[in-house]
Image (cartoon, rainbow, N blue to C red; front, side, top):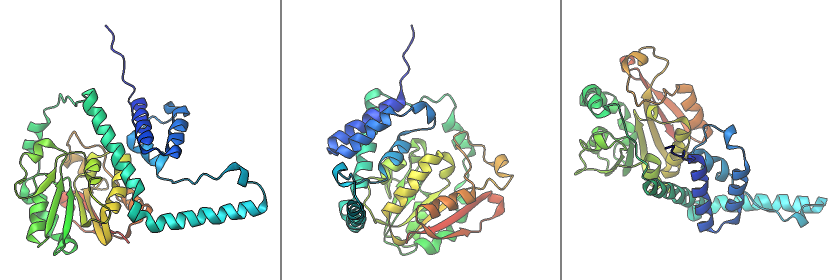
Length: 311
């Protein structure tokens, strides 16, 4: 008996269509129909985050065809288009349209997964592997003092990939008033101090969209990016910038592929890809972060750390 394959990409498009229809936005619906007509085969790496980024990040203004002809009409349209974007930029923090759509889309995807009963069945005994080879608390906390000046006495911070809450504990010792964590790994969350800290055990992007614009004084992502696909990281950087307050810092620590010992020391089967330092700097600059600095770490750790500021 043969089993039909599930066309995940088509499912994602159907989800986006339903969300667009619920929002009653005709421009989104048109974009979805155009996307349906495209050859999906040409974009083998397309996932829900790509579809969202490519289709909806650029806001479009529909100009009636009857006003497009003539020199005066062209100048008038150019003026009104620019005026539209200036006004939209002024009120973006208030209306926050894009963030609401992002949240709605991710919530629909989560509901769809639950409805289809999609589960990850792992053959590899990862829990046992993790318990044997995960670094000790002392080794994990070795770099924490280098980040002290960026978080001490802050009002609210969030740690992405908080593990067993090691950094959350350190942040509390630095007089941070409110400390939050995100840890998608159910095994690690079982060891975390959830009685002391509020830690979300869910998808990182899904959790970030639950938070408001300009909410946090610092965001940290220590030893987590290497586990994420590149397109996911791109969307993550956008979300981090959204939730950060002005002049606040995004602190990143990850494995250094320029250090040859990284390939000997870091053999976790769940690692997706080592992120090159120059690539990460480029992405942070491209999406608007400034004053990107490298924090010097012990070379024996085979890692690097970057700190970037939201303007």
